[in-house]
Image (cartoon, rainbow, N blue to C red; front, side):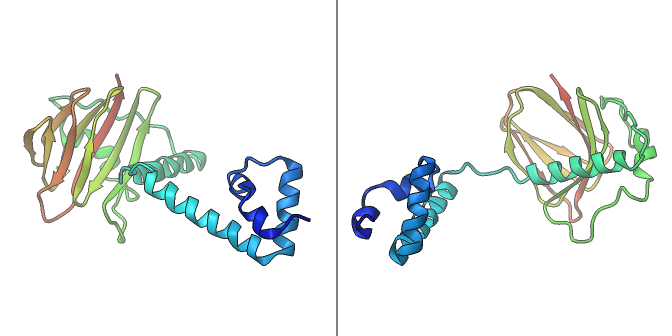
Length: 203
């Protein structure tokens, strides 16, 4: 059996943690770790160091990703349980809040008590369009859409949407479409969460 210290400095443990060792090499590492506590400790330290490095190098995750993913899962589960598929109208300059009464009056389209940040309930989905009721507590960070148009109809509260440096202030009943390739972010300006119809359309 190899000398533990030489084995630790051979580089095989780093390869093992990264999943680069062969089946035979992996079996040998497991045997060495079982027989020598210092080898096991080294494996744990390498794993911890790589985890820290990975977390530091990972790009920041947009805080809207998780709420929209959870909204998608919720919508799929509702459809699975028998909810009728519906097709909300496409947002445009003439859109009114009453156009969405069918969904806004539903008892399940409400904000969670423990809401924080962003919350959404999808009310319609096709490969070309996703429509949701969304609540924003503070706003959303800057993003750019290259393959989909993002449209808003304000239902409650107020917000400022900054598009490529230009600020647009929105109140209930206001509509706005975000152009492609333009950086934009949302800042809630009301004491209550800004409730919106959010629609994303394939470009």
